[in-house]
Amino acid sequence: MNILKRELKANLKVFIFWIIGLFVLLFAGMTKFSGMGQVAGGADVNAVMSKFPKVVLAVFGMVGVDVASLPGYYAILAYYVLICAVIYGIQLGVNAAVKEINDKTYEFIFTKPCSRSYVLGIKIAASWFNLILFIIFEFVFSLLAVAFLDTGEQINQVIFLYAVSILLVSSLFFSLAVFLSIVIKEVEKGMLYTNLIFLSAFVMAIVYDMLENGRVIKVITPFKYFEAKDLVKSRLDGWYVLVCMALSMVLLTESFVKFKKKDLK
Image (tube, rainbow, N blue to C red):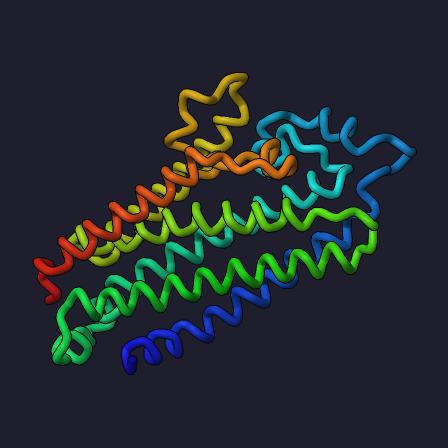
């Protein structure tokens, strides 16, 4: 219990900064929606967007999204939240696995009368708790921001499904960060390789949107496991729910196995 309290306290300051940023992103973003229906000259915003190069729309998660509708506009903000959640998840995963090794304080925590697996489990649980709290705040802030707009349109189910999808994908990257930080001997390289995979996944998401039929690369494109065109219609792809959960469990299980044999020096 002392280890859990210590981890939660250590993560608190960074967590608060992330929550403040999340609040600003969602509320500042949603206040822009009232002006999205029409743009200068009375032109439809979707018609204007269609004139942008597809690669630009892909970078900002706007491909195939009706930005003039409330669900479509929210989908864009949720895509930015997903990116933030993945980055935060990676940070939490790396810290959970190797923070003490990096800080040269591993002799303090790993010489307690507890097994390595127990300590690692507590650290992972504390970090994942922070990630879940981040998603809960995202859900609540989204509901409040939409209610503040007072458009009369209800998208609560869409917001909920986005929260679930963001949790699944960010948890996958969290688990990957834990795994790579443990199996790679050099602490800095664990973080580096995880970030490279994140950037690669982001680029693959752009490529996916650029292709007419990107189904062949979807399985290696976590950012597109749950697409806006489905979520805005209150549909969640059950297959990729299982994929995210299964991969996360495998990565964490292997992390515990490898950590027992890891040289902490």
